[in-house]
Amino acid sequence: MKVTLWGTRGSLASPGPETARYGGNTSCVGVRGREGTVLVLDAGTGIRRMAATIDASVRRVDILLTHLHMDHIQGLGFFAPLYRPDVAVHIWGPASTRSSLRERLMRYLSPPLFPVSMRELPCSMMLHEVPCEDVDIGEFRVTSALICHPGPTVGFRIRDARGSVLTYLPDHEPALGAQAFPSLPRAWTSGGALAAEADLLIHDSQYSTPEYEDHVGWGHSSLRHTLDFATLSEAKHLVPFHHDPGHTDADIDRLMSDAIASAKPAYRVSPGLEGAAFDI
Image 1: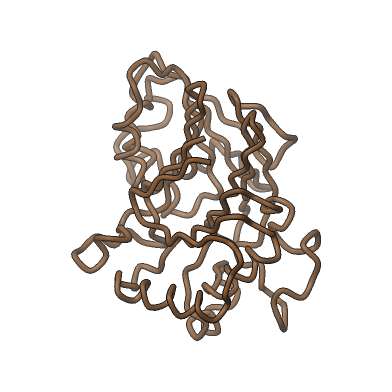
Image 2: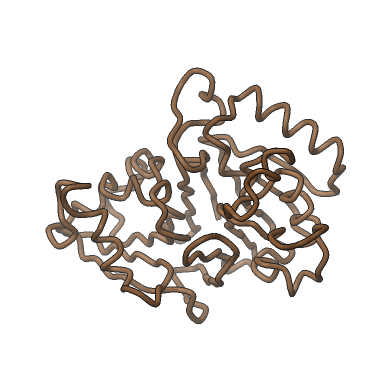
């Protein structure tokens, strides 16, 4: 599978010369299979550019939403396949005890927040609530599970026919409540089963260690916690992701360098740069 980062910023889109290298668009990752299957992980502002790369011959696209915070759905209305009547768009998102996935998405895809209502979109749209049993989408088998983040939030594990595994946990606080992290076995740690021995792990790394101490419970990880989680998961390749909107390129360079030098991970680390692509 080929994995492309179209938006790597967390919480708020942050364009500008000081964020140009890591990128200012919010969370969106494209996944393409050898047989042509197209998955879109989250619908942040990066989804607009991702849509421009989808060939006119594609007839089905699956969007996997980890949760419905604004930075993960703000680009949804600008996703071009929604306006094509010849395309089936399947949206997978977390269930809630209060309202359906459709009702919650319609709060954004309707006036006054957006000029076009969901019911007016010409595509063939189907909504699916997760977590659910493993599901096959084209050549991919997708596993979903609830993870630690405010509000209903899921992570995804995507396996292709060759056995390669991508795990996507863009908003995740596995260290919440732990005096030391990691303190529990992988099976008892939030997201541990999803990330186990992943070939590519894309994981929240929003804060520095001092910043995390001021934001415990906000649902995000420090970069050091991200590295420790990848070690616990026995991931083969880590992509730190969901950069804080207040961090410049220079800030992220420094944080990455210091954290990697301290943790000395035994696996490859590739900082999440908008536009970066990985073949796994």
